[in-house]
Length: 240
Image (cartoon, rainbow, N blue to C red; front, side):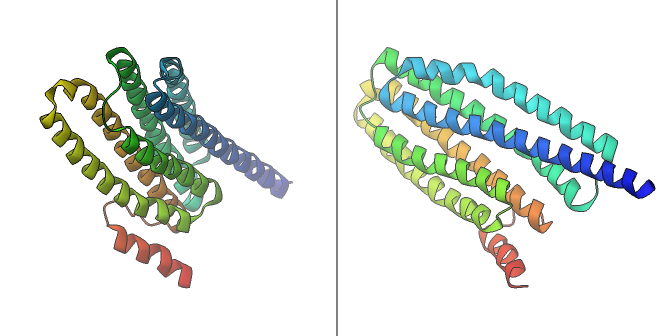
């Protein structure tokens, strides 16, 4: 009887863990769409789509609150250990990054609306499209890595962040130079620069989620250790 009771509790606990993980991935799917729509709204000067992105933000905030409550409830009732505890910690930290990706998407949507009102920027859309595509892939891959506990894919996301940072800095230099040559364009080009800044930050948050996947699977905190040591952590375990 005691064994059956223990097994029943274990099954309930597993179901709770699976529920909270699926809620995180559902939130991730909505955030991914938000990034996609924000970039599209900016490039296509679609103020209606931009407004939709802004309206979804409260739904994402509510999802973060709900998942947070689930995590706290599981911690209080189940007092999980080892890998289960790492899963709850990783989820509770990842929802913060997802919520912030949502915030940055909303900022891009605001810039899209301003550009439809002021007139399009003479420069920067190619960079928004290119960096936007890369960052969208990073968010998608980070969530996929979380869904499949895939440390190799998580490492690839972290590595990709370096290239996004480089491209952002290059685009920034070119756009600042352009504004100096044509001061009349400053207000409109600045809207594009702020949108690019938001995209760069979305890349950072995708990297954070990828680092949490490595922590979840390997049990090692890989934040702030650099890509070389992160690669050694992932590949070293793979060889064992």
